[in-house]
Length: 94
Image (cartoon, rainbow, N blue to C red; front, side, top):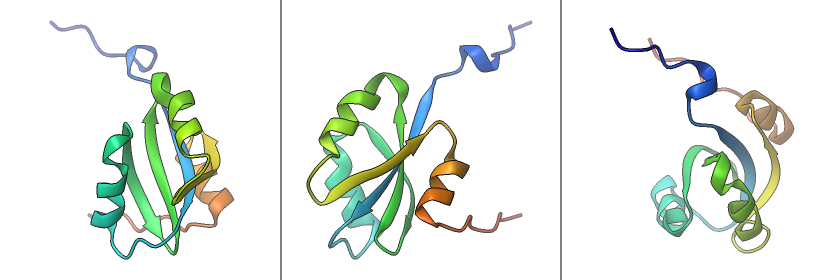
């Protein structure tokens, strides 16, 4: 029987809340972020939430300090980032 992957053994990540300027669609923003090791989660009204690996966090934070996408807040919990940016959680699809 395979050993259960516990929480401590899973990959660590951080959530970064950003403000973006001049992106009309999600695809345009994702194309802009292809050089950075992040995953786009939410995009609402000039705000976005990115998921980044814990090991890449410092370098990504430095990259997002200026430019068209600027970091505003970060946390280990997406709930806190949504609260700080004022983003309402989308309803769950069932």
